[in-house]
Length: 114
Length: 113
Image 1 (cartoon, rainbow over the protein chains, first blue to last red):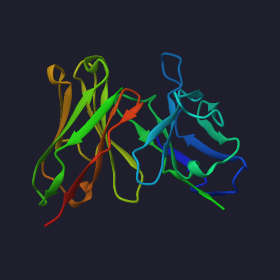
Image 2 (image 1 turned 180 degrees about the horizontal axis):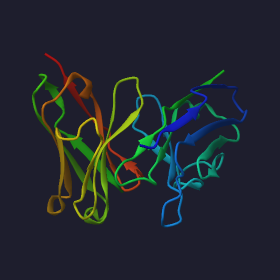
Image 3 (image 1 turned 90 degrees about the vertical axis):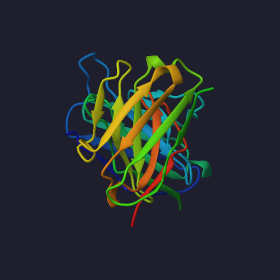
């Protein structure tokens, strides 16, 4: 099974400052179709997860452009250029390159305001 | 607008059964892969099961042999039949569409005596 490892697990950030979350996979996430299936999700307190980024770097509709995704192969990063109060929550990476048969999430990174 | 609404959660004794439903609207349901993802309170996300647009099915090892996923395109719905439930199955169960672009609010399953 593919293992997704995020770091850090806790991320205190000052408002207006940048933030960066790393996600590493135990196997390449490049699918046989040539695409790389790595998504990022945000889960605000008390809410369902919301997809922010798909296929490494594509922002979903309505996602502020302060969020960006990058990476390739097994090494990926989610960056927030200037953290706002509404960004507090837990961020998860997820691989879909090895679906079927399975989808795997990272452990989650808790972002809080310092 | 895409909507996914789960139902069927509740309290069940260990060894018991539940059937979760996810009602979908706002998109061409039959064309999409659909998924169940669960979350233990205060913990991370765990993929549970998927059903492809062709009704092919996939399960996490932790539920294989106990859970069955199915879909009913005529009703824009899909289901998770959960048997032989264990305490460790206690979680909020979310349904999700496609590459998890959209999620429901979740339904709580509690397995306890």
